[in-house]
Image (cartoon, rainbow, N blue to C red; front, side):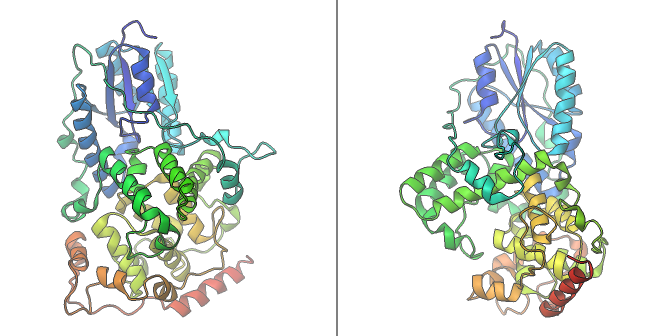
Length: 473
């Protein structure tokens, strides 16, 4: 317990009030609690879409905190410098936060914790972003898991603590420290005109996330096994953006899914597996940090991927103009909504890395800039899974056929028509919105002729298989 000194609550990817162990610990410590968000160099380096989405979340959280008689303090600068300044200005005796697990955040947090402890502060980090700490899940021989299925089996029956309610009150200090104005940060500047197009598709904040979870587990989870693969259907939870920013906790999601499974809803266990797939990504990011930027399987280091981000074929992929409708529809969905259906992500990633033989890092970085639900570990593992260089990868020689995938999962063409305007006499508003969201410098118009394939489905598959064979895979 404190002697009345304030506690600084450093918020990061935990932008909620309920089921927040660090917040609960700060309140339980006694004394005032000062919530703070820091625009540090790591956060400043976010891509256009995730940085803009972060700004929406911070605005929502600030209102929720104010409704409890508290304030969200915003500061810009190096995290250690900012926290030291705040501790000095407020007389705070402690700094608490929720742990992060990607290597860049771990390096920052380790540096911050060491510095603050040198200053004599009570420094605590708490679980909040995951169901389980990555180091707490071990194989029978004491190592970490490298394959998903055994990992899932190790976790599926493990007890998950029930989510905690939000504190009834956040004790405020007598005097508040100075705060930046959120609008001065310009978090949405890089989105330009795309922000207005993308905004209606965002479910921002804790209340929206909890509401969506309730709808999904009550109405849609029973059909999740089949509906999740249909890109034209509203068959998924849609909570990826909220989980990415911590607007909802994984524990709340887990217990809602568990109740649905106990109620006999057939898709519930599959959805729980997807939550654990996210855990697996962070498990690997913690134990094998190279997954974030290097081939997880080192035997891929010599593979002759194209690394030219300005290659005309890569540009066509980025613009959603490959001439392969399923690929292009998915890319356009991302520009309009900030998100992309999971089945479509696999097709898009396979086409870039296999049909175009371009490096997965190109796609990883592009998604990092364009997705409002961007998550560092999930994005890295997903791209390596699709490329064949990662853990639990689909067999490296499997090349998804986007034409047969469209026939199977979008048989009536609803998804393709929703996002591709060219060739339609009366394009949908969603398809036209793509031309409103993209950079003007692309100079694209809906009345243009839809392009021929930059690389045909059969030709691309043959080229990929030839490249694999020549490398001795």
